Amino acid sequence: MTMHRETDITNWGIARNLIGPTGEATRHGQATKTLEELTELFDAINKGDIDLASDAIGDVYVTLVMQAQMWGLSMTECVDQAWDQIKDRKGRMIGGMFVKEAT
Image 1: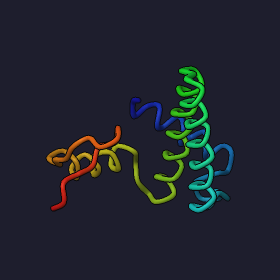
Image 2: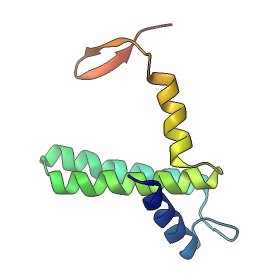
Image 3: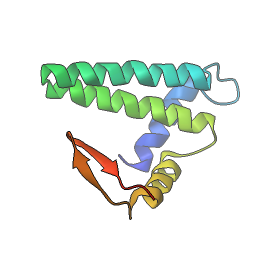
Image 4: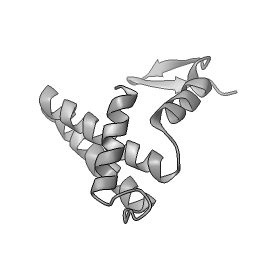
């Protein structure tokens, strides 16, 4: 995902009055929308449907771009912060999930 696409998504949200100076969406409402899109991702996983998964992952990303904007952040800032926290993390796989070592 390029910065250009994040700008497109942000402009889309402003044009629809979700975010920006007159934006009506709330952080809580947007987080709820993210959960709805995650539910669609679980449905895609359960069905083994790659097209539904692709759409759901993209929709989750869009909702997170909106959320980041509501906090005055960019996705690049958020991902960079997450990367800085996990890049040296150690752990192991348990039941198909990565479990980090206690620090």
